[in-house]
Amino acid sequence: MALGRQLTASEALSAYGWDTLLKVADEGAALLAASPTSAGAALRSRRELLGLTIRAVALAAKVPESVVAACEASKRVSIREYEKVARAIGLDDRAVSYSFDPSANRDLAVRLRTIGDELPPMTASVVAAVAEAAWVALQQVRLETTMFGQRRSRFATDPNYGTSASPAFRVGYQLAGHARDALGLGQRPIPSLRQLTEEELGIPVIQSELGPDIAGVTLEVEGERAIVLNIGSKNRNVFVRRATLAHELGHLLFDPARRLDTLRVDEFDELARSADDVPDPVEQRANAFSVEFIAPQRALAKLYAQAPATAVAEAMNRFGISFTAARYQLWNALGRSVSPDTLTTRHVQPDPAWDGAERYTVDYHPIAAVRPSRAGRFSALVMRAAFEHIISKDTACEWLECSEEQLASAEEGVRDLFPSVWQQPLVSV
Image (cartoon, rainbow, N blue to C red; front, top):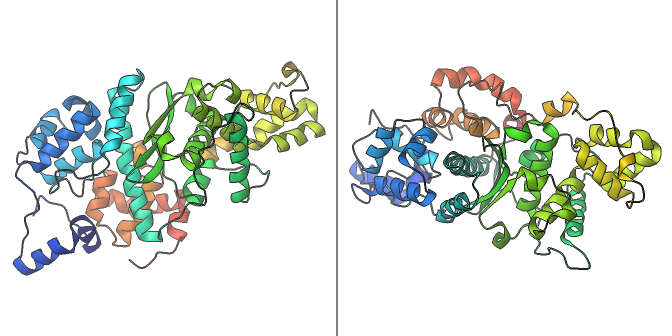
């Protein structure tokens, strides 16, 4: 087992089950693989479902193409290499060594392939990025549940996408008000949408490079929903990033499964349009939810009543919203009773404080080589789980792609970035 991976008892039980572990205890060993070729067949099947080449998977897994080919051929390659390839294509790396289909979430792979064919901007690298993000999201949910217990959503999905009398954007406004009330926000600004989404709602927010056109993705992986946020392109502007996250939250909280359809991809051009100008009722509702959730019309109307000349700038600075969105939202808040040309400001750049509140740790994570998709809350959960002996340090190092020395030296810095992960008490594990 020198080339294998060390697991804690909890990990082994979760991955293999009591029957297999009892057989190991009784006989000293247990046959895990269904057949000598099952692991390779699982990897090849998933790659083909995603429509990816061996080269694309190798790039995503950070291994040579020869390693991917060897794994798919079920050759004698280190289990660590099999696991790297599995993670890159969204498979459960714990089970790939013994299960032909290590993940029941085949639908996500099929949908990724379908959308990849439909949308030219969804290149092979983006498909691979979303597949890997799905793996991160699944492990994040498992760790949260194991350490802190099951978190139940306080929201029910809503199939109402409007009527001719009450269009979808009006429903979006109503859902935003409902969400704010349920979260006790009132009309107050939301200092950090990232923190609210992950810490208050328990929804994984995975950051990844998704190319120049895709703003964000909402996905469902094995019954759990998560958000994948593009850290590049227009999302480098914190106000655009906040709008993207709020838009995806509108999908995730309220879209029924048939509307979410396992995976929803949103492009920047669609998110930039005013809600009532979007023909798709699903997107129209999410656009309206986003702007109303970030900056409620009632609050903006009060700003205008207090100081009309500075209302747009105040809306931007106080609520963390872009100039275009603030202007349009304020115009609606006033019942479109004023000319939009009067709603302007000289100050259109975000206050740096907003960027600090929403920053996703990519640029200054204590583990310098960690990939963006794993540099968020996931890294803190992995690290605490390792130091609490819920997972092995070997597993933690594999997932964060670092050495044990780097893991130990990064602990203090990661604690500082994600204090809530260490402050929350553990359930019995």
